[in-house]
Image 1: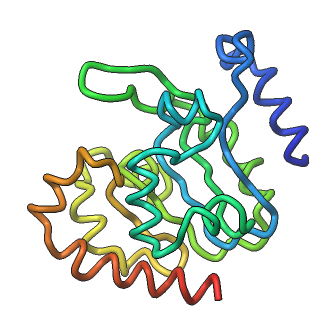
Image 2: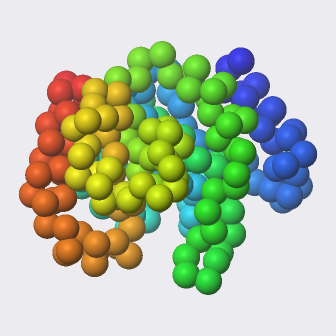
Length: 192
């Protein structure tokens, strides 16, 4: 299955008809030259409306953490973005709703087959970490991120880069002091 066929299959899925009827396409990026894949939560409303993932303050933070600019992120073909759900799941009481259950089970296997050159997967936030690291819901994101080295070389877990997590960062100064320099070094090694 190629990218276009996959997009058509996702849009034809009865579970996605609410989006398809509104003309909303699934938002993900899988250039076959990508060396780093970012698996995050789900597109926000701004991303869905603009058709550009991480086109917000969270994206600015993520790019800064990775040590890359917008050109590398969007135009180099070196970065893939595969959310846990390819559509905005809706707004909740205190932020966006979680990705829909079962979406990754159904669509990630075919999506990841389109990334033959991937060397590192960034697991951004607890949804992707629990799924890909086969963790119970009780496993705390802070401990997973603090122990990032045990998931290398395949996975690099990160907290979500939302400005809402600035409080978490202040409580966990080791993140910017230790984790981010290690992430930037790994990204440089892969992209050079």
